[in-house]
Image (cartoon, rainbow, N blue to C red; front, side, top):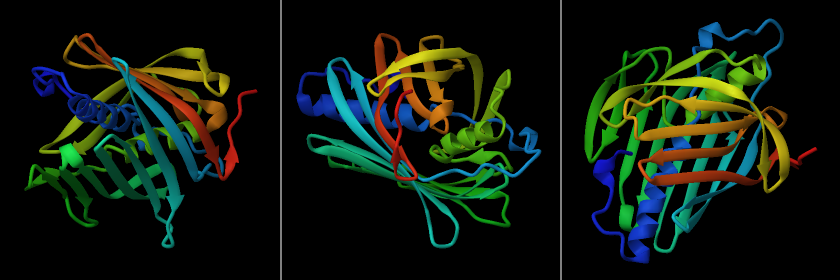
Length: 261
């Protein structure tokens, strides 16, 4: 999100709901960024992703939105990651489907569908055996360049978790390519520190990462919990004077609720 999407006047609850949804889906989908799978250390058996359900609360300027993110396995061995929320008359639902080879995410498709005031649709399709990605943006299809590192807006989060599960030592700089809209975007994330984070579930040890932006008015920080399979427990995204905070309020992994020790 950039400042060009800011409403000129935010006077109604409906406008606020629309704006909050846009911020929430952008922040949650674009925060956790993976490194190069080829450099991940996998000396022993690969630790696999486990199904989970996570509930998040997003807040900005007094408005709140609950989000639900779920990871499950499909019949063909694929993973299906869903994310969505609704406030008043607007909502969204997004789905990412991917496979895993070792510590590498192999994306297959991504679909975003807004409802109500943000009735928009985005799609990204990774066709095996081709060097292009098909991307739907504002009712127009685009052919984007594909590399072995290119992911979609949601599968990037699982790539980071998968890498950390198998090599818990954070690298200095983490880079990734994400197919989004009309282009493939390059991101850079740096490890900040190990920190204890206070959450609604209690205090938990986290790894603090910071995403670097070209725009100095944009700042993104995120905290992942090693004890909870590196689920994101908190993120803060700032654009000028408009911070958006996302906090984990409950989660279960393989059907077992997570708890602070």
